[in-house]
Image (cartoon, rainbow, N blue to C red; front, top):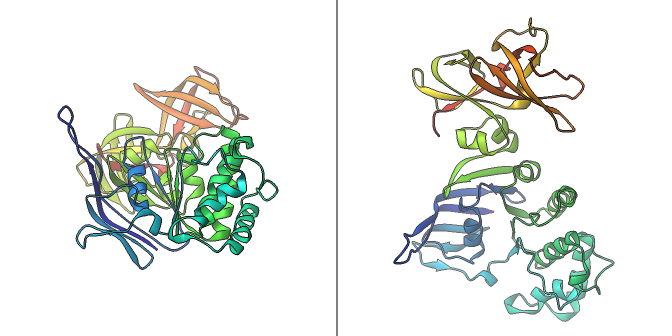
Length: 369
């Protein structure tokens, strides 16, 4: 449905500043009906990539194909204008017209340009899409009279009414409060599944990316670091950047001793740690172990658990109650480790404990990547 090959976008500098490569050699292929999120920190190139897909920015090289139609190709000198790409886009700022009511805001794209629809069909399509987004009873209300969540639904309705081949969403929930964001995530997921629209979503919010997407493309410095299903991105990162950016984690530097029966044995400052997951690491080379705080097991009984691999003696240095869980800062010798556990199994500060890293949740990664 969407195919991007070797996309590159540079912004020219001035006499006082150098140019910037916003997107470098970006490639991605999406199936019809798929929901893919571009995830990364500010300045990583995700919004620029989205704007290139929409035609709001002209890339320097590469090729973009939507369905069977090439909308941009540097080699074949193809550039289809944004209004001819049959793409719906929702911006972070909503970009709705305050002087129009809900109906007129949604109807506007059907009345302009080559996508104009006969007057008799406009009302039918507008009312249908307003029902889909939950605004069916508010067609005559002015946009300025809507709540933040309703304005977001209105922006989405205006993008959907043109029946786009592709829907682009640029951080559409970032201006909403936490509870409203959570409820709209469910709505957005439901809408996308019911409508079957191929969707590209841009965000720096890891929770949004993991909860909404069929696949996530993690970006850094204009490049894709890893593309995968949300579970794989979180549980099987392939680079330090991915492990660190998506959620929180503990890192341990070490040397890879052996790989045997699907387990990598790594020598670290706290001892040998066995890893059930590993990516692009070599025996004898330096690597980094990642283990999530919620996977660190804590035993006030110093005899530990049933599986004694990756068990170390430590101490609870500090604990924090955060509502749904307890967070701990632990020490193993001179090494600090973070852990997260259930509130019903609290361990006091200063308590000697056994700390265990489950082998299946330890990931060995190339050092410094």
